[in-house]
Image (cartoon, rainbow, N blue to C red; front, side, top):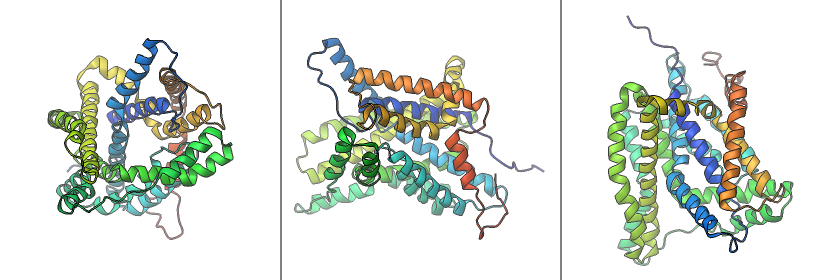
Length: 399
């Protein structure tokens, strides 16, 4: 008789992917000045530097814009499955505890948002509740719901409605005043003024942007896809054939979607059709390119010994992904916002700063994990997750 395992073993390639995603995020956020789009006058700089600035900006956004966050979201759903299934194997129900865990994530996200308006943890904490009612559905049903979310059904409805009714206008969220308020404190506010605006106008602006650009439904779809990956054990070496098929499908799909997204504006003049159509195309193109990146990391880790060694160096960084992600926002705010150093830096120079932040964080991760099993925020989140409440049974207290 086979004895059921009591917990899933940690999957190293998932930590590699987390480290890869958070590294890509800091490289992007550094050149954006952490949502503070103010740059020095570059009219007098050498032509080669202007070229470098443009190449870095366009190259990084093509490679990682909308994709690094998507990898992070995919792994969020995967982590939920591991935690839920570990408890299931002990005969416990993790769903209510996960709801509390999302409340804690919301609080952590607010701390992050006080410094950086573009953070995603608050969005994850809200959208994460989709995992609770779906985690016991069949894989086919979860896959169907995930696909529907990724296909942006609200945008599909808007397109059909606009085609059938020429007078129809898509709803518009007037988030301009919120972004203006955040820019004003980034450029001239004190620390307390920055925190106050970031926690209200900044959060409204960030969530409105996520809704308007299809990130809410896309995040839900990726959470569910990550749960399916965990349920089927697709991150294990023996399931590489799944990623081969995924890679082929992603490559075949990405280029038509990317091309259509770039050219569709030349043929459709009605913004009530064009805007939701471009959201669908860009969202799907980003998911396909994200899948290409994930497949590349997985094949590199499992199939190429030299590349596997290089990628495995990201494991410590991935194990402390939350700590690294939150501290990136704090450091970036300190460097670029008025309450801190208010540094005026071009794109190439900003990217060097981003690389330095990564290298410092990476070194600290190696030192920390030599002495601890979790990063600081990861440890606090785990400990707070398993706080006992008076109404909660002691059964299944802690994994």
